[in-house]
Length: 285
Image (cartoon, rainbow, N blue to C red):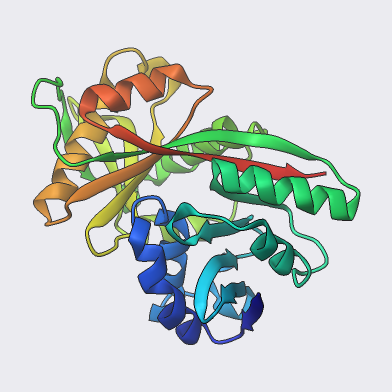
């Protein structure tokens, strides 16, 4: 096995992009990251590739394992064609940085990597998210879609920081903290990829597009305040946004769900999303 670490994101992009594209929807996160890095126009926060860890493990000139980590986020992995080799994992492990916070990838690969990593480092791992990756090629026309969808805008600063804080709290099981520094919130608004569902001119739900690729676009940041839940607003928001994505020429929409939340999984399937694989987010402790 041959290990190669990269310091130039463009070279890493050139070597790994066609391999990751073999499972474009599954590799939404690593593909999205290396596209951002290769483009080089956005280095906000974690997006500066100068701080990334990028590596491949090859055999006979063929890449068997691709790894990328954008601190402070977890390591993401892809075993080419989803056939992982324990020798490739061991080769990567011997060259990793001193410590990594965790790993997020397809379920079987995540478990194989975590077992070996924690054995070597005398650690344990715990599951922070048991995920399922879904894709959609057509929106179910029978899903009710009340309200109208619009882009998040500057005047939404009156509620957006609180919604974003609540969403993060729900996902990371942490306390909701809203910063007095509005830089991060203004950055998110300026990206023009967050959409709000309005009912009678009142914002009731939100979702965003992310990681636009050749044929796939992601859907994320799906949030409805507790006092608006149970009325079909999240379904309408995601259905309308998914249709908007398809109308722009993308063939598929992709989103991640938490399997611990059966309600959201049911909602997405009714809209037209179908599961493609399971993914684990594991933390090393």
